[in-house]
Amino acid sequence: MAAGKNKLLRYARIYVGGYNLSGDARSIGSMMAAYGAVEMTGWSDGAKNFLPDYRLEVGITGFRALVNDTASSGAYSVLKGAAQSLPVSVLLGALAEPVANDPAYLLAAAQLKSPMGWEGQAAAIGGDFVADATQIDANSVMPFAEILSPEASIAATTNGAIVDNGAASSNGAHANLHLIASSGGTWVFTVKQSTTGAFAGEETTLMTFTANGSAVTAEHKSVAGTVARYLRFVATRTSGSVTPVCVLARN
Image (cartoon, rainbow, N blue to C red):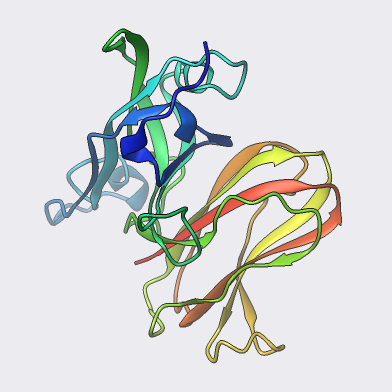
């Protein structure tokens, strides 16, 4: 079946794992962010990560997409395997195509179900996503993020736009990287930080992703400690072409 396009989501971009499902997206019910109860037991961090009422309650509910059965890239093919672990990012353009520094929502997600139904006369598949305890840690908390690198095909080393957050922060950060197209080359993907915004040699590396650009994939990464005021996404090429998307949230 052919992909559809809901004009209500015209300027939203929805990435699930290594795939852009924006063209199939029909609706999103909510993107949750609520503080849970204070933990008073002596349980380990590993155990507490599985408690939905302990940490920040985050997740995406009511996501529905038109059934597109294109192998490995349509909504049906991607969402039908419920109980899977994958990063999810929603990029929110400000009445225009999403660009660097626009808002986003990110989740190191576990998809718990994939209900089927109807939207008017069209078949639709759904998905609810919750925080995946196998991917998250103490630095994977706040889901509201900023875009460091919107979707773009690149074939050379690329420095992303400089994103100014107004001030440094001290509670770590986490990020999603989605590689939605690859020619099979070799890359290094990093987030650089600077206290001055010059990026003239004074910058340092905030995080380096494991993904090397050789295949379609997605990755969630977190860091502790201070995050400088200025950030930028850097894709360093050895060979090939790739289409990355990167969003980051400070805690």
